[in-house]
Length: 487
Image 1 (cartoon, helix red, strand yellow):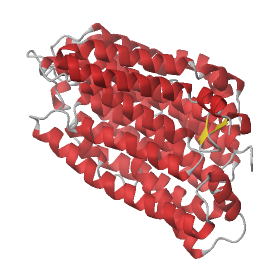
Image 2: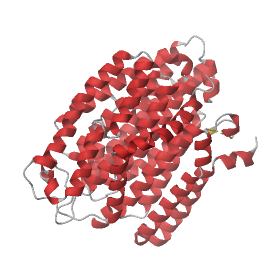
Image 3: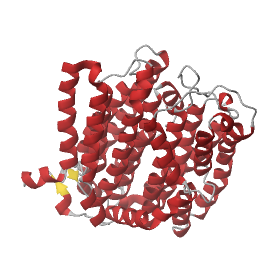
Image 4: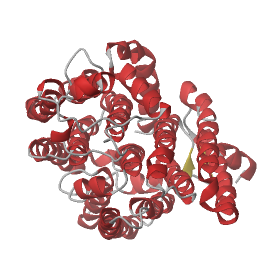
């Protein structure tokens, strides 16, 4: 084993780990009074780690040359694509945190360190080439996330969110670990390549249960139905910057991890898991759409929206084709832009005391009090609904097109029909902010960093976003092809 070559391949992870450890010491010495400088340094480390991904991503690198530590770690183009989205989402979560926590006088120095270590865990997850590496990355991310959810110590909702996330997350980790142990017991291996080879013939009953339990454990992390029950409560109770982080970076990491495991490890047994993914896709689209209709809290509505969007992502995975996986990756990019923009807009809904406004009714007539904010939120909602000519339409189009090409016509038809249901609650928000009589509650000012993120996100989801489709499609194609190289 060439350790020098292996360490060269984990440059982004080393950057995050070393910076995280250094900032942890700085927190112990400096305390909360240096929280803002720590957030800036953490964002800089994430940017530096992201820069290191470009050669791999643009060259579409794959194969044994991108394998580190005897196959435990993969620094290929697929992992680089996922990491780029994860790092962008983490930077956005760091940018919006200081003002939010500063108003509450609760900005803690360890917030940025926790985000950094959670991101490191996700980075390891998407690059894992072994179930043991997968679990180490997953738990590193999860342990940091549990603390982040309950970081507001004096807020009962935050404490409740952290507790629920911890209990249900521990259950999901146990299910995943049991599935991994079954696969090890029936294949005698933990490395993806070895497990894939061992199950390439007739799948035994024990190994089949292992496949099912692994997918069930991963489904919790992506908040797919029927493992979605934690999402609305945690998203509502956690501080909004933390919720922004949960709705973006871990979602991308879990989806990328699920795709890698499904294609690389279980690729020879597509018929064994495809029906599970199809069920989760349809159920997530329907439950997410129907669950959001009756919500009067914007954070809970967006939580159900994330469940709904995961259903569309899973349609791409269900195809088990390069085109489907490429569509999945394109959808993730667009989803990240829409989600960051939506949650930043929610963060900017403030009353005259600077407190956050979460009730949809309180947003009535927002266009008269905050016209730019209202129009940005209006277009973000329409993009989430997949209404052309906004860029959100393109994400749904590519996954439906891949489903049709894979002869999954029924799945595509159900997905298209269910997306009409989802459009209702998005249009409800649009109607409230544009046409209802003003409630006069949203009057607070927002910092420049929030406006920057909102305007960038709005520009990406606008029709100008279609200018990105050639380069985005090329990167997604290169990343998706990595998973099918050995099949």
